[in-house]
Image (cartoon, rainbow, N blue to C red; front, side, top):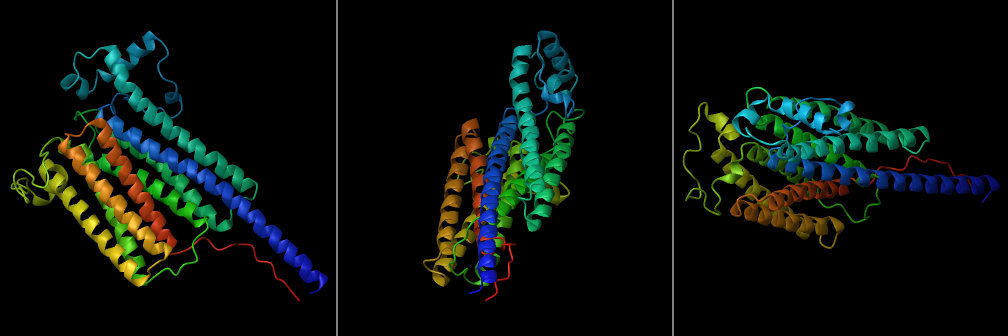
Length: 367
């Protein structure tokens, strides 16, 4: 081997080592983002379940970071809340101290959302300027940042739906807000897994990968349906299982006209469809697991299909318990957190079929 090839070999090793360190730093950063988004969704769920989402009636992206600091400012904030229908029709007679309880939930939700913007944007800028972000990662990461900015507007669009004619936010906008959060969460998991080491096991048949995509789509759909359930308070009625309103298939599912609107605005229909979505997700996960164990036994991909099936079973059990217990706050938040865990693992499982991002370091070695 010539001196030139030895030098090239050393350069290649140094470049690969540097890229490995950079990817480790990016993984750690994205893990922090993922945990923060997970926490944000749970706080958002608590905000919805405690009917706190309309307690702050103005959108102040910068000034809104500072909460009321004295009695006069609390009275001013409370006076703004008194002007919306929720106060007049639901909370009339509420004291300032009672108002503070719902205010802090919404303030915490908005503060955490702003914090995530900083947690994402500043390290991205640092990694980019110092050359630690590979070219193939730049646009995906900028795309996630853009989704975060759009999410801020969607959040206010959602809140504004409950400030004039309604006593709560629109379930359509609530579902859009949650799905956008899940898209940010999933995209972060996807990129994070892409800069992680992957198993060298055979990825299995293309059919298994296609069904992994189906599972991810079903997980998103089920979360969307769950948001409609939350937005309509549909989980507070028909608290029996497996029967619903005394039957496997309850009546009056299409009483509203046009018929399609029942799937979005009829609490009974929405809850029933959410149940069917859970059954479908469970059955598809079971079939995917059996197929993976049969066609790629002993591989990491097959083992992940088992873990995903178990997670979905646990999530279904939590959902049933939440329903039977009439949606207590702790169980409802556990169910929402479980949905994100299932979604995140479904993304990681699917990403495993594609492997990690290829190394950008290309150094010719001559002999």
